[in-house]
Image (cartoon, rainbow, N blue to C red; front, side, top):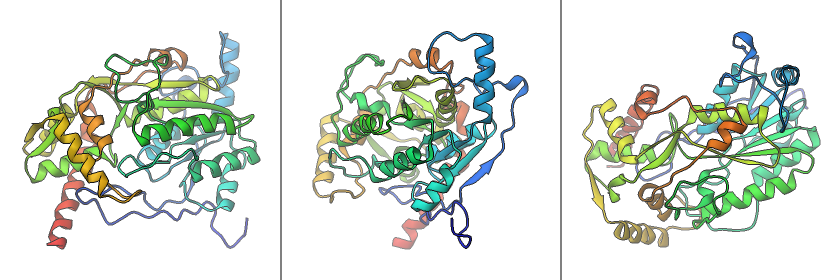
Length: 383
């Protein structure tokens, strides 16, 4: 590394703020940083389970002790610093293990330097944006290719990859588990599934554990919730099926804890569903509006009409550009998505800590207030 270059410098910058119907929350500028762990009494992980890097099988107390020592001393790298899930995973890991945080768009030299001495890499960066008009191509995202190549050169032992439960598709009307057939329909779903398969094949000798979280909510989410809250702050919002279809949600903070468990106890080559609790998008919006002290005026739009409107938006939107609402967003809001994560709870010795929107909303309310303020400022500037 050149002595004139600051170590792990990030070039990512944040846009001035969210505006209605465009992508929110571009990643902030951040240099990668190392943090020493602060262990809880008894050396337990955040889930309360003794850590271990063993892949499978029954473990004795001696096995757990050896595994715990290894996971405590192993250096972890979170790729996706400054992004929604990257920040949440970093927060969960920082008090448990030695940690480096890195933006996904650093140069090759910085990426190689960050990988040096790392045993576990958490891939939390957004490889595809669900709010953009995407086309399915059997090509891995370039940033994922760079990460895997750098990890192989550095001798990384394990990759924990954050994917999405939406790879199962939007047309299941029963609770989904790991044995449910994969039926991705939208380009985003198909791209994420291809990405998983490519990673498992390309990683070679590196252990890969894939996590598929349900609908993730939390501070900094940059697709659905900010747009919907901003719309409600301006008046009535018409949503497909009234956003009243029950679905499974998971708090971003719990996804971070699951990443630690997967680094510790995930079986190589396995995919795990992550779920929290069942609710509706309407419930989430009502809780947010109460916290923000704004009216929650939601009207129901027939699904077919909402879908046709979204399809029209996509037709006139260039490939790769932001589209709102897109057909994928309509299906995410309007169709039921139920997940059974009993396999991950047993196999990772993990369980969610957030069981309602009300529990997490105090940590989100000032962020959502900022979304509204930024949207109002943008409207004034554009007038």
